[in-house]
Amino acid sequence: MTAIGARDDLGANPYLAGNFAPVTREVTAYDLPVQGRIPAELCGTYVRNGPNPAGPVDPTTYHWFLGHGMVHGIRLEDGRARWYRNRWVRTPEVAALLGEPAPPNPFGPEVPLFAANTNVIGHAGRLFALVEAGAPPVELTAELGTVGPTDLGGTLTHPFSAHPKRDPQTGDLHVLAYWWAWGNQVRHLVVGPDARVRHQRDVTLAGPSMVHDVAVTPRWVVVGDFPCRFSLEAAATGAMLPYRWQPDEPARVGLLARDDGDAGAGSGAGSDAPVRWFELEPCYVFHYLNAYEEPDGRVVVDVVRHPRMFATDLRGPDEGPTTLERWRLDPTTGTVTGERLDDRSCELPRLDERRCGQPYRYGYAMDFGPGAAHGATLRYDLAAGRVEVHDHGPGRVSLEPVFVPRSPDAAEDDGYVLAVVYDQGRDGSDLVILAAQDLTAEPVATVALPQRVPFGFHGNWVPDRT
Image 1 (cartoon, helix red, strand yellow):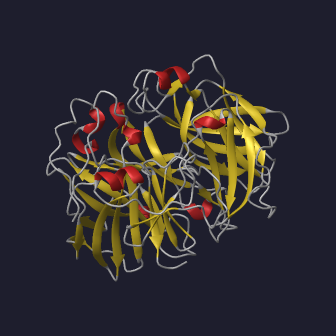
Image 2 (cartoon, one colour; image 1 turned 135 degrees about the vertical axis):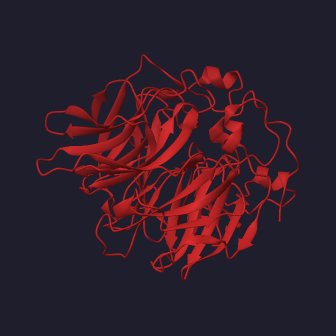
């Protein structure tokens, strides 16, 4: 077990308090206690990632997005919770803090290696911890040990992204990568089912934007360009995350025609791919729920909309209520129309990923209030215009929900919603399994975890079957 000592550096920063505070131990536990019944079809590992500083931080400057990455995993098999593990992702800085040698690095000194703290995905039978803004993926073992940063078989030359989207029709990952030194450019990467970059193109934005997510349809890649920009002034003053709201700059979303060809990893790098841009009212978007094409050629893009980002709170995403909205982009007329799908403030939206890029009916999210406060688990029926709410009980709040289909050919809502739930009363966490078709019912199963899982960002179900 790896542990760090008692921490006296957390101070009054709200993103270092309560369930934002880091845990100090790496734990391995077997045969976890279960209330209810874990469905036998859930055979795989639930993994999630988030910031967890491994060493001292300055609470006056600490930003929630910057803590060292810690991956948590719960192995489900044969109706049992076989194990729980949590491990820091061994970047060079984390390895030094833990007194360990740094993992091997295939990149040169010009490629930054920092906290892989935002997402963890399974792809091509491998496991990758991800972050954005300039760092490559870090490969992990099935038991969450760090293999090291990867160049994907020599095909990745530089940054990746925290939030790739998998096209279920092709098995490809689509990625929008950015790095402050690139200025106004982002790079669209296509990573094949073999975990090799086979195509890339550069896209020019209006400014050096923070670009977290991407959406895809059969014909288009959806590119967001929002006025939260890299600020040289903020960087010069020592800001750890020097991105700031620019209220006088435009917000827009663009359609980049898909080109998934096998022209080679270097194809399109340095060029400026054409994008059809649609102007929007000022806003910021971290996450797309989904995008798809309508029969008349319009493109539907469903987003969680923030009114602005890093304008007043420079330590976390706390700039007013969020809303789930639908934008319709018309490539023929160049117009965009919008509608609000729900007034409830939410974040970290997910769907049945077999429907990614296709028309769909159901989505999932969590309540998200002032100070990045978490709450209930939500299920959206977008056809009926209805929201179901699972309240986990007093002092119990949900992290990001993940939908898992009952079987590969199950209906869109036939499966389970997995969410880590924080219990303030005991300062501990559970993995809660809900029936997607009856979200308000009592949980199918609750797995008691051996330690608290701090609020983080993204997780995924990695099934045994491929």
